[in-house]
Length: 378
Image: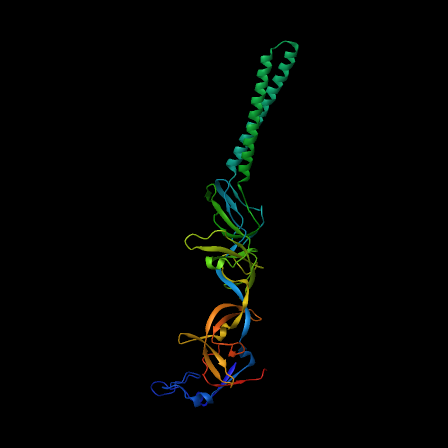
């Protein structure tokens, strides 16, 4: 908070026609710059928290990122059998559990095919039983000298053929059982239905999409970082994330980094997992934040709010030894996080020295040369 007292500010601004504008606090239309005496008459009063002493600080380095929220666990439920969708019991937003039956495809053809394979298996088993019985009889007759060895060999071969036919029929029945099971539509994971892609009564082709299921408890931001920044990013680094529509920023961490860059953009996909993502967050929302890549060397730095753009240059307001405001042009460097609340600070390459006191907040345009008074803390 600042208070400015000056005889100049008691005047009302005058429009070009010479009448008062009636806008309190508007700039005064004056053809010439204020004189030194006028500047000396102005007094600017600051609270102690408005001023910052320039000092060397270790800026927390970071990499900014942005991207959509995606679910770590998500799946599209597809038809594993062709046929008419006769039942679909869930809709968007419904909770499902892994393995839960959420729909059915008409099983008529699958049931008929299963019964056919069961009959073929029974027939093959009967043929095997008959061939085995014949073989055993021929062995007894051969032992008594009534049949030759060739008869026994032929009976043995018939048993082998019948056994193979029985095994083939059993395998075909297993396929038929699976095809019947595929007429049940199962949830592949526990989560929520994100999208319903088919309706009961539709004729579905094999592999047609039916549902989309996501796990809203495991969300991450999928960002694409330039190759110039990716060398500073490591899996496990902490990050802060702001999500559109959510007031409170969330903490997170770098969960994984793609080993390959995207074609064309030459950027590398990075995934930032969000802590406690269940609740307000939904896949598809947009998030942006900063990955903390560590603290750098100590450098002279000031809060970002202290720097103003003026006539194409960056300036700060410094408090001189005789307690007056002085506009000082500065050259800035890298940015980073510092302060008790992790504010953004900017490195000062030139223009200020350690120990200088400056105005640390953006309090608007201040008068160069005005006297400074620091109010007692309330």
